[in-house]
Structures are given as C-alpha cells and as structure tokens.
Amino acid sequence: MTSKIVNINLSSCSYDIFINDSYFDFSALQDLLCNRKIAIISNDIVAPLYLDDLKSTLSDYKDSIFSHILADGEHNKNLQGWNSILDFLAENNFNRSDLLISLGGGVICDMTGFAAASWMRGIDFMQVPTSLLAQVDASVGGKTGINHKMGKNLIGAFHQPQAVIINTSTLKTLPLREYKSGLGETVKYGLINKPQFTTWLTNNATVINNQETSVLTQLIAKCCQYKAEIVQQDEKESGIRALLNLGHTFAHAIETYTQYTTYTHGEAVAIGMVMAAELSDLINISDSHNLRKELEKHLQDFHLKIMLPKAIDANKLVELMRLDKKVINNRHRLILMKSIGNAFIQKDVCEKDILQSIKNCQQ
Ligand SMILES: NC(=O)c1ccc[n+]([C@@H]2O[C@H](COP(=O)([O-])OP(=O)(O)OC[C@H]3O[C@@H](n4cnc5c(N)ncnc54)[C@H](O)[C@@H]3O)[C@@H](O)[C@H]2O)c1
Ligand SMILES: [Zn+2]
Image: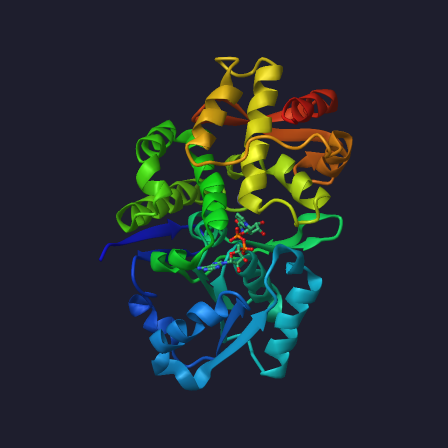
C-alpha cells in the first residue's frame, strides 16, 4: 500500500489531502464526522460503484448518513442540479453544523462544494474525488460552482473543503477516455512553472499510460502539491492563481460552443493549451518560436487530441471567450508561455491574434 498526505495551508484554514491506493482513508477525520448529519452527494454512474464502500467506511456514523444521487454529466452541472441538492438538504433538515461529502468526478465536486458554500451561508464539506481530473485538480483549492447557459462556471464561490480523501483504486473503473482527460489537466502543472514535472511525465509516460498503481499516488501527490503552492500564495485568484487557467479560456469556449457533448473538460484544456502555445509563438512571446510543436509532442505522449475540427466557428469561440471571467473591459487577459515551465499573465491580447491562433489549430 502507498499513501501520501499533502497539506494546504491558507490564512483562513488548513486542510489535508489524503491519498491512498486502496481505501477511503477517513482515519484522521473522526472528530469532523461525529455528531452531525452527513449527506453524500454522488451521481448515477459513481454511486452504484462506490457508495456502499464509502458508507461502510463511515459505518460508525451510519445513523447520520443520507445520500443524494444526481444524474451524471457536465450538462447537469447547472442551477437545477444545484437546486436539487438544496431541496434535499431542506427536506432532511440539514443545518449549519452538518456536513456534505462529494463522491464523484469534478462535476460532483464542484456542485457539492457550491451547495455547501451556499446552504445557510456556508457549511462544511469534504471531497472524495473519483476521476483523475478531480483528484489532480477539481477537488483541491476551494473553487466551487456550476455552469450558466451563457458559459461555464459563471456561477460559483470560493469555499474550501475540510479534507480531500483520494482512493486511487477508484480509477480502475474510470473509462480510459476520462483517464486521458485527467492527464490533460495534469500536463498543465509542468507548463505553468514546473519544467522538471514535464520531464518526469515524459520519462514515466509508459507507466502512466498503463495506470500502474505505484505511479498514480506519486502523480496525484505531485499535482496536489503544485496546486497547493499556488493556492497558498493567492487563494482568491487576484494574481498568480490565474496561471492555473492556462488553456482554460479557449477550453471553456470550446465546451460551451459544443454544449458539453463533444469534448471532456481535460480534452478541451489540452487543445486550449495548444492554442495558447500557438498564440505565444504567433505574437513572438515564446523563446523558441516553436513552443506549439514542443507541447504537441508532449501531449501526444498521452494520446491527447491537439487540433479542433474546421467545422467549429472560430469567430463564435472568440465571442464566447469575451464572456470569460478573465476578460476585463473587453480586453483579453490570457495565460501565455515563454517556454515549457514558464507561463505568465498577458493582458490586452488582441482579438485578431486570438482568432488567428484558433484557426491555426484547426484542421
Ligand atoms: N473547481 C476546480 O478547481 C476545478 C478544476 C478543474 C476542473 N473542474 C471541473 O471539473 C469538471 C470535470 O471533471 P471530470 O473530468 O472529473 O468530469 P466528470 O465529473 O463529468 O467525470 C467524468 C465521467 O467519469 C465518471 N466517473 C467519475 N469517477 C468514476 C469512476 N471512478 N469510475 C467510473 N466512472 C467515473 C463520471 O460520472 C463522468 O461520467 C468540469 O466541470 C470542470 O469545470 C473544476
Ligand atoms: Zn480545468
């Protein structure tokens, strides 16, 4: 068995991420579980697989446990999904001292977190992420929210969990496409400020692609540690935390345009990062002027898609990008790269260049 603990230490709170390769490790969390109602929020794909396991781990509290199962899917990460959690909490008389636990991928983590942030102005919650993407990113750092029909994650709040409990054995049932999607988000950390992580990923690509248990704990712990380092410096995204959005302004537009039916989040992020690299080359910001090719090679190590079909209207994507939270006074603030491991915030990016970089990544 391998296990690791990563701590997140913020001015407002501190919590641990428990990473374990065989069970849901709540052993250090007993004080946070007793004498309160606990609502497990999951979906109709993950609950049949892991809800019983999780409940038996929490069997000491079995009389206090409730569960609420939502329909699977990013297209259900909306006001209706969130509202159904609130209705459930109301029907079962949940109050300020009670606890929510998410059990699922990033969609469930984000929705449960946002329900916890809003119920009675904020109650405690814990994340039990079961997809790779949620284990390396979505469950950590306190960003919670839902999509609005005009765009992704437009409604939300910062609300930190009390703990994150990762059992990497849950990845055994994750569809391969979703595993690869998680690798899209994983690659991001190397590109932002950890070039040594990019090298490590390349050197370990075979074992990572084979999902070998021994490498998964390390991979997830590294990502959580990198995210912790950034979130600790800038919890509410007034500066450096924006770097975690590398590729995301493009990705959110792609996801909204295709109505969450064509690309997973991690796939869209991978393509978005290629567009950011292309734009960095195009406006002569990258050191090598060949950054896009370097990144494409890296993404291909993990068999990730790197191009967008021509049928997608690039002008529409730019329009959608205007709605992104990172656009201030119609000026695009994008995360670009000087090189792999050196991302930065570029203000005032011109729309003509954005449009061209999208078109250059279509085939
Ligand atoms: N809050 C943040 O900081 C943050 C960061 C990154 C991404 N996100 C959000 O996360 C979401 C994407 O997360 P995701 O990729 O996990 O998507 P997801 O939650 O839709 O999960 C992907 C699919 O895998 C299924 N699944 C999850 N775990 C499984 C398992 N162990 N076995 C079998 N099936 C399993 C899900 O039910 C779903 O069908 C997006 O909405 C994105 O905006 C949030
Ligand atoms: Zn993301």
